[in-house]
Image (cartoon, rainbow, N blue to C red; front, top):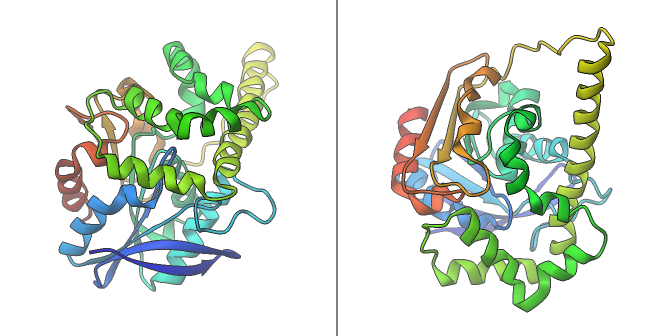
Length: 296
């Protein structure tokens, strides 16, 4: 049984779902188009295993504060996760992220490895931008990222026909998922909250600009050889579990083949059959078993 609470961290007030009252904390970050309720199956399993499990609505989503400085970058998400971990727990935290939450979780674990005992990333591989050039088919699947870079039109499209685009993306990204209607309605209710649509699209716009700049820089480096070497930071030190759905229509499971290369610490990569992008909703028991086995 989840409860709601409000938590102040990193200058924002986050609306959170909480389950359990254990000594260890699991912090679970959602993605797009989604909200904190997507984590409820995992919150319940964490609670049963003796954890306190918390899932915040990410900055700008629903009742959580918008970013006062308009910052919806991956680094901003990482700072939110670190601040929430410091506010909610004295000890190391298990950090779980899906989609955008996974991107923020990778960054948080890289920035503050001492805060997290384990990292669990769902449906997004590490170093996503770096590996994109190797998978040209992914560009076709990423049409929505390009579309979201346009002014005003994506806002209208997302709101059109009572947020029909949310359902279209769910059906495209998880083609075998028989999603519950009440889950879909809960997410559309979140997107009806003032400012949520604008915030959700800003995540993509700021990511798009950063990704384009990096791809251009990398292309120039390969073409002209300016002499700068790759930043060899040794990878993420936090032990990591990376989970992909074999039927993911958003990010193909082949992009996870070399996920372990992003980590200096222990990494386990699992591909779940019969699941797409929303793998934790489609196969909640399988994913929860994998996570609880990994975190001990």
